Image (cartoon, rainbow, N blue to C red; front, side, top):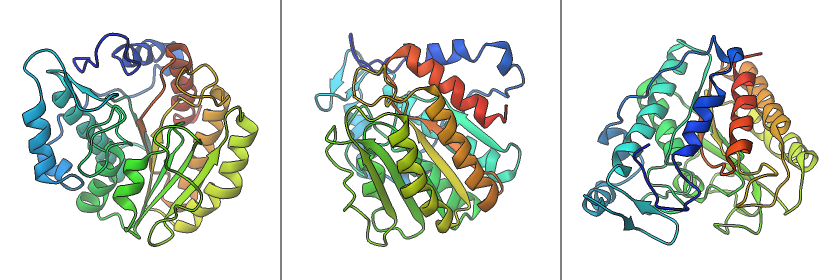
Length: 298
């Protein structure tokens, strides 16, 4: 909550507040909830260089705001929140990989999928999904990790980080053309480990489901992952102010169920979902509820 992007910014603490509120419904009574621990530098350093962490620490303001670009702002609480985000991601990986739980959803901010190795951008500082993937490998011996990103904006940072890594598959549905401008079908990675299925403004759930079923899900299945990570952005919702797709809650629930099916067949059901975007508060809350209730198997 202490990560503040300034007045009028769409990536605001209310995003987490509405998620907490909707998950108070009685249908979530059996949901196990934990406050994430604080991540540590070694977790971040599996993805980001020491010089980058030092630059963020030096830029972090004691009061007011530090603007890193037109979209990305640090307040005094930002870096602490960002370390909690990677802490939550790694904690979820720990519990899923140990078999303590079947799957987990991490309601984190700031988001992460635009952060490149040494470049913060698009509201993102640490690449939470990349940190989670590296943690699964380093701490739990995972050989192959698949990342599915259904945020409406392409995860340029995650793609950049794993472009030359044959052991991590990054797949994405997203609107094009739209920020950040990456994500064409021709971007395939050094080992054909990048799978982009761009959508067009106005596309609805039928187009999204076709992209998933025809392009992405078969590739994830063939990849035989030990863990599936979801970059769960809900800004493809029809109500979202930052994009022009027309997905609804049922589409996110459907995609979640399909990814769980692949996980059940390939990696013992192991799924970790990390919150990315979603800026209409009602659409975000309802979409997260549909996503989580599906993860719960209800």
